[in-house]
Picture 1 (cartoon, helix red, strand yellow):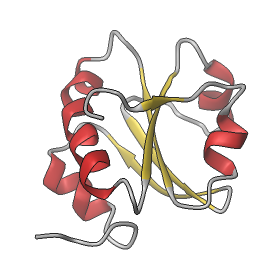
Picture 2 (picture 1 turned 90 degrees about the vertical axis):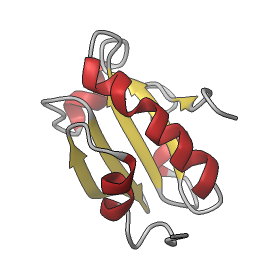
Picture 3 (picture 1 turned 120 degrees about the vertical axis):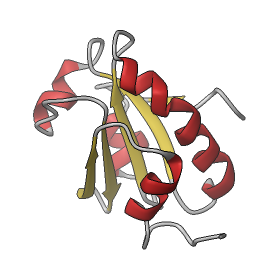
Length: 112
């Protein structure tokens, strides 16, 4: 499923993210954001490797400003991990895959 991370919207956010049984990492991004495009392949790789432990979805802040505003997303890329309907982790800025995985320790089982 490479290159096809699920897209969530303001309308689907509650069902897709807040009511999920497993942790969900939401990538708040925009088409014009270079660093957002830079981390996309890493997120897709993490989704492919750890999809049974954490779901990774994308939310375009230009098309869905309500959710971004509700969670105080001021700079992108912002990666929020939601568990049980709450933000349990926030990662801001572009990072290499290994650094993102370190930040997700506790949500995914290291395969290294």
